[in-house]
Image (cartoon, rainbow, N blue to C red; front, side, top):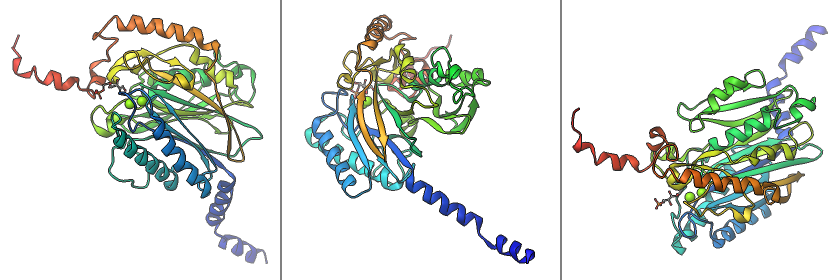
Length: 391
Ligand code: F6R
Ligand code: MG
Ligand code: MG
């Protein structure tokens, strides 16, 4: 009898059961996908034209009606068209990525018709092939089981690169002088795990804070190469934050505009509070990007309506839109930097912008030679080759 029971038990395909259970769980999980591309803009690299927003709105509205999307918002951060979408298809779903690709392609056609600048710029491939990786548009996604209440913040940047999130995200999740919860909240007290991507080698590291903070900083201080990709709570590996890691120059092998990254952060109830997530943005840290993707400039947190770069094509900007997610539906947004509490930061950013600009074409206002590799500067230097004299 016992032998027969053991034989029957071993005949059960546990892997199959595991697959069925995970499929059932994913039916109740929500995925938030933020996907963006610069497909052309109004007057140089300034803002997305309203016609492009309209086309994207129509495309996502159709996808919602068909049931593919549960909810969405279309917006822009400067010249980047931003699609914020909820669904139950999981991360890197071919259907969702194709929807975004088709939407950007339609918008790019309108941009071409209107004669907008750099129409179709971020669509680096001729056709969609299953996933947006390496195709130009930036994306970041988190699949999660909704908590009783699910506050999230979507960050969008213009005129900078994904490493711009390294400093503020380190502070949110690893600096107790910035996030009080690391000291006070027992759920955060164990710390967080940081996944860091080396964009040159294409491999990643997982480092645990607080005990490996110095190792982590040794990597992510090099913002052009080591990028924070994902951050998990250590006690249960709950995904707390995710950043888009697209480096357009590495895909195209030349300068095609800055990556202008997006990021998602989940907040509250055992994660940093909304105010703790926003606190590090009160410091306008220097980021790479700005004019011709070739200069360091201060990051300025702004209301969405002010996400339009002007002076020296900048200064670079961050927008933060807050949502509550309920049953895979988006409630919001709340425009979180639309607040006088960030006025001082903006003034400071302008003061720093002035100071940096006074250096003109000199480093450290202009980026160093390694990063200038992917700009048009090497073409200029090439001209001087025939003029070399031995010393
Ligand atoms: C920054 C950016 C702009 C352009 C600059 C020159 O990300 O896109 O600063 O690099 O306006 O643009 P082109 O070479 O298109 O005239
Ligand atoms: Mg652009
Ligand atoms: Mg942009």
